[in-house]
Length: 110
Image (cartoon, rainbow, N blue to C red; front, top):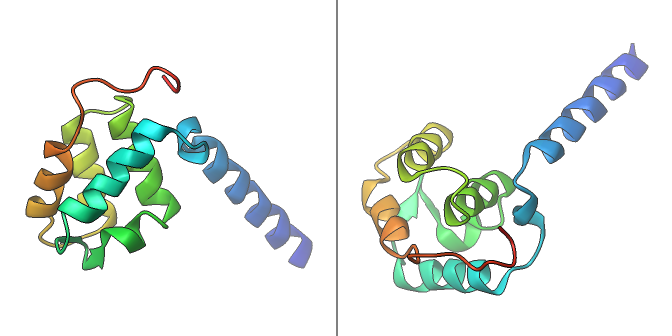
């Protein structure tokens, strides 16, 4: 029984890792600068009651946000996903994030 649970847990971890945006695990100067700008300029706003410094340490938030930055999802998909993962009044914080999106992204990670 314990072996079956361990196998299931390993499978879930493998699926979670492969489902993440590949750029979420690599450093990119443009993305890093953008997240730093959000952390500074969108403070003290929060998402789901959490400040941006804490959110950028959460893999799910980092993955979603990198997908937005690299235009793998659009703004509506991003806000819908964030609101489903982090319930609360997130509109002002999400508007701040979106307002900081650059018109184009760095070509190194696309």
